[in-house]
Length: 148
Image 1: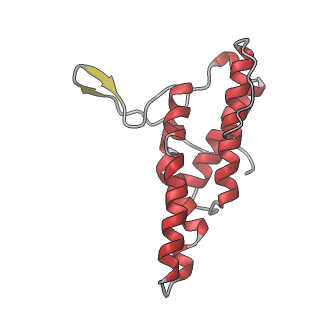
Image 2: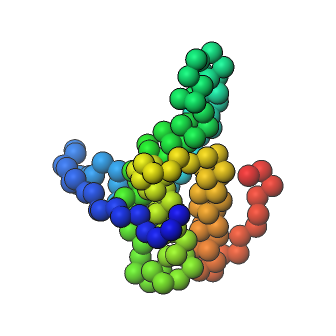
């Protein structure tokens, strides 16, 4: 992607039922999970856009890149307030987390380049690698899942 995405920290704190909240969360693992919870929508977008394109005169409006852009636009909000712990900043964990943040925001809010299904799959492969690195750092030896 070429460098860091020029994002700014967006935190609008509110009181909700006695708790301090913000729209898209703030944290490290927490925000990665919030982002990942959107994955199923990406597949739905692809399927729905493909179906709409079949009957549309403007097929380019309903192509894979448009579907993936809409997915990244919605899901990547959780990456604005991704807080990479200082102890990971210059490690493989921190660099991969930063790559996920930058790529997600680049495709969701950069408006310069439309993502593809390959970019969608790559960000989730990177998330999986990140989870394995964090487990390793915690002393947990992961065993690859057959059903993944």
